[in-house]
Length: 330
Image (cartoon, helix red, strand yellow):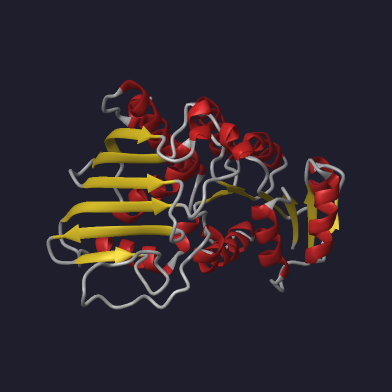
C-alpha cells in the first residue's frame, strides 16, 4: 500500500513511524505546509516528501490527515473527492457547521473515513465497553471522567485549538458515548483559569468540569485540567448495580494516595498521551489499514465525530451562557 501522510508535526511523525513498521505499507509520501519538515519526517521514516498535498495524494491507496486542526476539513474533502480511504485525527473540522457540511459530503459519496479517537482501541476502554454491553456491570449509575494534562500546550497553539472542550474533552465525550452506547442528552459545563493567564486572552480555560445526563438517565461527570504536576492522568470510572470498575488506574498513574495502607505505585508516571496510548495508537492504525483494504467498516465514522463535536460545542455554550445545553440543539 502507498500511504499519503499529510502533516509532519508531532502526531504526523508518530503515525509515520508506526506505518513504516508495517510490512503491507510499501511507501509513505509526506506533505506539510513546511516542506523542510516534510523532508525531515520522510527521511526519518524511509518515506518520500512531496511538494504539496495534491502531489502526495497522486497514486495513493489511502490518506492519513495529521495536519493542523484548521486544515483537516479541506484535506479530508479533497481526499474524499478522489475516492481515497481517509484517516483523520480528531476533529474533522474546527467549527460545527463545517463539520456538518463535511459529514454530509462524506455520507453522500459513501466515502470511507475513520476518525482518530484512539481510546476506542485501548484494551481497558474496550473491556469497559464489553462489560456495559454484556450487562456484567448491571445498571450503569455513573461514569466519572478524569483528564489531566501534564503540561499545557504551547501558547501559540491555544488560539488555534478551539478551546478546552473541543480540543481535549472531545476525547472524553467520544469515549463516554462509545463505552456506554448512549448519547448525551444534556450538559452543564463550567471553567476557570487557575494557573495560566494566557488562556484567558483567548476566552479559554485551563480547568474545566461538566455534568452530563445521558439518554437513558446515566450521569457522567468530567473533571479536567491543563496541568498536573505528577504527570498525564486520564481515567474513566464506571459504577453499576453489579460492579464498579476503573480504566487508567495502574502502576504508572500519576496520583499519590494519602491512605497509610495504600500500595506505592512503581511508576514512572505517564507524562504524555503519546506514551499512555501508544498501544491504542498502533492498533488504531492497524485497523485503518484493514478499513482501507475494504476488509472491515470504519470503527469510528464521520458521524461519530460529529456527535462528539456537538457535545463539545454544547459544553462551550453552556460555559458561556451559564446554563444546561442539549447537544442536539446546538
